[in-house]
Structure formats: structure tokens, C-alpha cells
Length: 280
Length: 304
Image (cartoon, rainbow over all chains, first blue to last red; front, side, top):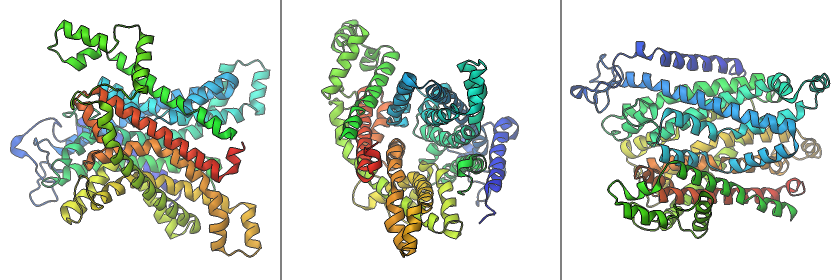
């Protein structure tokens, strides 16, 4: 089974992720209809491959006669933006704390790492639910909630790596030639960690996209008229008997994007993470 | 014994974090009195409620009162049910624990079996198929899986009920949905752990002394490979709870998660707080249990 190695995984992943990103960027060009335009004469039309389907609405329409393909195309924007930006929040916050804890040691290490331990025991969904219950779900709220729910895995990894890198000769040389702590952390230690952090960050984007769609499926994301994949799936759930394609096509869209991200992440891990290189 | 004491000392930390977090968020939202009374309240009513909720006190005192009430299980009165929030949440806890236990057990059994199969047949067809399924499972939103299962087994075939709670047949689809959410991680961790342990010298020694491959696997590799799997249970508890909220919502399972989501739409703050607190206590207790089990089966941990 050697042919399904990291190279093929990265290739499939890049194609899926790039494809989805292009769709998101050019949504206004690609979408055949306005995703919010209602047309009650065209309600619940099936997709083109079913008997009553037409090319006017290739993936059919929803309960308000809105074009499903256009809604799915616009929905990709929110999932990608929230997933990426939440990852950036978690990555920067978590890595910074881990770097400081690992480099300084002592009391900073105790405080930061015990905090990370305690934080890990708190389920992310609870934080998200409390925040959304109180502030309502907006794009910024979602990004911050998901980002600050997922920082501590970076802290742990950055901490362990920094502790071992701190002892290496090139770091000692930098310190001996008078480099300050911030300079050493930023210019010498952080670049050494970037392959491992890239892998974790990629795999996390997939999880974050799933969490965002789950929150919006529960009604805790952006409010309903907004075209998000989770909202479309939630609306489709109420019409499973008459229009199963609404929920299922939204599901397919989510799976394609997350699968692409996960394949990319797994392929990168097998390529970049030397510790695991032999354990495919 | 020293391990036990040190571990018990860490128990309150996450709980205090949760409580402080909830308190801060609640006070950031502005005036809770407005949420409780609605728009058409008179100033006198507001004054009475403000004194009742201790909102006329300084912030540190408010926090002290908040803690005091929590310690007495007093989360206030539910706005939609007009009953103590704690009672309402307590009634639903059993259903949620049942769902969590079923999902977790199914995930561990399937995950460990799958992971061992991958390791035994490394780089051959079973490893390939199971690994692909694991990556696919990681990319599958559990709410869509639940909906697909409903379409297939409830609507098309009519074998199982779509939702609700009742006999064993109501358990099947929610358990599968929740377990699928967790199985991939258990497969991947078991696979790597078994492969790594199989390379240890004591396994070579056992084989050299005449243990067959099956005996080496069950008696020598597995007992030493199981520890990362047990730690994974602890790490997955938060995700498990998140999965339970989604699963309960799909299958109309009358548990804490579904209650919490509906309470948000009703702006029923006491229920949300009570539910968050109960869930946090459950997770912290389960984490403690996992750590103690781990210390019991692996002396390297309790002697550290």
C-alpha cells in the first residue's frame, strides 16, 4: 500500500483545499443566483439528477426557493475564514505561552503549565455555549471562542520543544554573544519549531471547521438567514422526508473541505515530523 | 499515596477557572436584572431583585455570594420552568451519563480492536482500509452522520426510531453517532502505541523464549501499550461532551446538552449556569478517575 503515501495525500489535500478556497474567493462570480433571493414558486426543487430537477437550479432549492448551489458556494467563505483565523488566534497565543514557559522555566513555567493543565479539563463546547449564550453568535465571537478554546495543545508542544532546544549549542552561542531572551526566542527557537507547529495547525483547522459547522448547526453560530453550511444542514434536517438533498449536499460540502485539510495535515506530518517519519 | 494527594490538590483548579469564567462573562453582559425581569418591570421591582441578587454590593462581595450559592447548589430559579435550576438539570443528568457511557465504551472497544488490527497487519490491506476509514471518520461532521443514519435506518428501512428515549432500540443510533466521533483517535493512538511497544526488547526476549505471536501480543505487548489509550480517554472527555450536545440535539435525547441549547434560546441563564457547572464537575471527576486508573495499572506514574 506504499502508493498511498504522504505525497498522494498532500496532492489530494491541496487540490481539495485550493479548490474550496477558490470557490470561496470567487463566490460572487461562480454562484448562479443570489444566495438570499427567495422565490416561492420554485420551493424545494430537487437537484438536476433527479426526475423533476432542472439546470436552472443544478443542486435544487430550499424551502424558500433559494438556490442551494449558490448558498453552498457562499457558505464556504464563512467556514474557511472562521477556521483559519481561529487557528491563527490559537497558534499565536498558545505558542507564545509555551515558548515563554519553556525558555524562562521556574515560576513562569509553573503558572503557565498548571493553567494549561486546568484549562484542558474544561470542555471547549461549554466555553463556546456560555459565550454565545451571552454575546450572541457573530463572526468575531466565533473566531475568538474557537481560537481561545484550542490554544493549549500548542502551549504543550512549544513548551517541550523549547526546553530541549534551549540546551542546544546554537542557542547557547547566541546567548553567549549577547542576544537577549526575546531575540533568541523569536529568531533561534521559533523557526526550529515551525515544521511541527505547521502540522498541528493544519490538522487543527479541520477540527475548527467541524466545530464551527456544529455550532451553527445547533443554532449557536451566525443567525439563520446567513448562508453557512451548518445553517443549511439544520434547515435541511426539518425536511428530510421531502427534501433530503438539502441536508446531504451541505454534509458533502463540509466533508470535502475537512477531508482535504486532514489529508494535507496527515501528509505534512508524515513528511515533516521526523519522529514519526518511519511509522506510516 | 503521595501521587494521590498531589492529584487531589489539583481537582479544584479547573472548577475555580470555570466558575470565575462564568462570573466574569455574566457581569460583562451588563445588567442581569433586565434579563430576569424583561422590559416592562417597574423600578421598584428592579430594586428588590437587585438586592436579592446582591448586585448592590461591590464586585468581590458579589463573587463571594456567587461562590456561596454555587456551593449550596443554589443556581437560582429557571426562567422557563419556574423551578430551581439545579433540580431541572439534575433530572436530565442520568440520560446524558447513559449516552456518554454507551458512546465511550463503544468507541474504546472499536478503536482498540481497530488499532490492534492495523498494527498486526501493518502496511497490508486491513491497516490500509482501517486507516482510511479513520481519516474519513475524522472528517465526518457527527451531526450529518446522525442525520444519514436517521434517513437510512429510521425513514427508509423503518428498523429503528428516529428520536426520543425508550427501549434499547432508541440507544442504537445515538451510540453509533457519538462513538464514530471518537473512534478514529482511539484507532490511531492504539496503532502507534502497539507498534512502538512491539519493538521493545522485552518483546524480542519473550519471542526468543518461545512465546508465539498471539501470546506475545496479548501478554507482553498489549498490557504495556494500553497506557496511552487510557490517557486518551481523559483527553477526549471534553470532545465527548461536545459530541453529546450535538447527538442529543439530533435525536431529541432528553439530556443536559439539549437542555442547555434550548435554555440559550430561552435566555434562561440559571439553567445554562447550572448545566455548565454540573458538566464541568462531571468531567473533572471523570478525569480524576482516569488518572487514578492509570496510576493503578502503571507504577511508573505513581512513583514519579
